Image 1 (cartoon, one colour):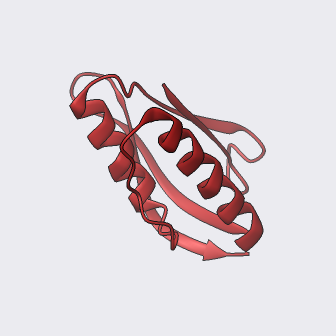
Image 2 (cartoon, helix red, strand yellow):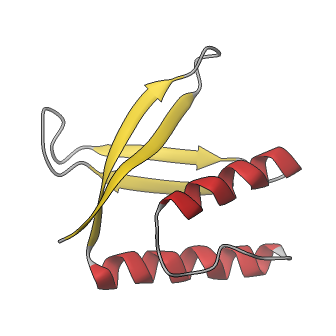
Image 3 (cartoon, helix red, strand yellow):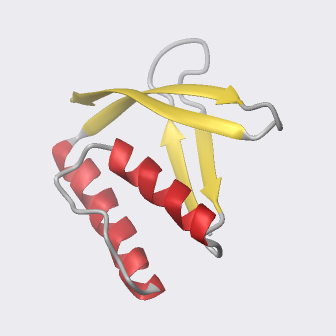
Length: 94
């Protein structure tokens, strides 16, 4: 399971959190996780072959985002089946 939390920094829900959870036990789940990670627009290549590499990738991404002080404009919605959909609309350097 890949679990990411995002703090809302402005607007009606300021200081609350969005949670992104993705099961990575199937090819489709891994694909969805990789697509979301790519949308974060870091300089880190989103590739791995083993789960321990995936764990290292997530930690490297978190460190990169914190060190570069990146913020994201996120569009949050629900799809036809009621699942949450997160779309990165804009990347900001704080």
